[in-house]
Length: 467
Image (cartoon, rainbow, N blue to C red; front, side, top):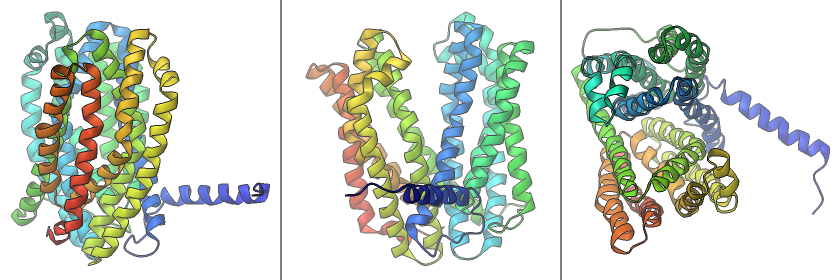
């Protein structure tokens, strides 16, 4: 087979560059018509960048706070662990907003989409006020419950109080990005996080210099707050995809009820996942310090490589919602198949990377030989289920995009709590496999979850969900 000519290579690079540019400015595109492969890529590219940018907040905090001492680092880690509750609520509300806005856009009812967006803002602010008050008032107690030493609790309370007290910016950042994604305006979601991260990176060292550890919380809060202001400006200004959203204090109980129905089960779905991972950490922690350290190193590597897969699955959610709204269930099914294929191929590549290059990746993050050996083992074992995991992520997002958050919640409850945790305990303790047994339970569970999700998906009940 002849090699590609320079002209052919230039042509391919030019097409890729045009696709990338179009994905960042695809406000006017109708995703219920045309090529599905192109639609998936146009949505996935900015969504992949968006998910990558969200992870930058924690990395920036850890980088700058690391110079303040171990108590400061411990505070950030413990606070982020508890903030998982806030993130779960934010992402659950975001799921509901994405599903409802996408459905209205697909129905060619943009004014109804804008109304749903306004009601989701009203609902989220009502919920987050209660969480903010509780978190800010109970900051020292939260740190102590999480196992902080008296010194860490005393030093870290102001940081935790600020993070919880202004958690409204966390919820709004997730929620409004969900609105933009549902409208097919994924690029705007990406740009809002770009603005927020840029502000955080600039402010973090400055405010830490003047205020110490609380300065890191101030920087993150202000950065996210500026990102929210950027979002609200575009939301209230309106666009070709989504008409001007008008702020209202008038509650539409029918719309609020639908948002709550989808959002609460979506939040439960995320809490089920998060809590099961905490139990898995506890199972590994029973062995030795190297095991838990290796697991943490492996999870950080895994999350980094999963970011593109999350972006692809988010694209599937938008396409499902819009095509169901347009009365095109067959096109919704085909969009899921296309996204699942792309995700499966990508995850197959990640599997090969982890099987053959896990050593250099782990050694870059940790120099302890014992931790390295276990982390490499964890990556290689867990990656064996990656193809299934990639497909399963798309199927879960398809259910959520259709507004059927109940189905993946039930599947997750069964697979993670009824299957994965007992299996991990059995393999690790009863069969004497130790940490390797816990690692092995993960790909087995993810493969099982994907098979169950596929069977339920094929039944097609998700197509009939009304929101």
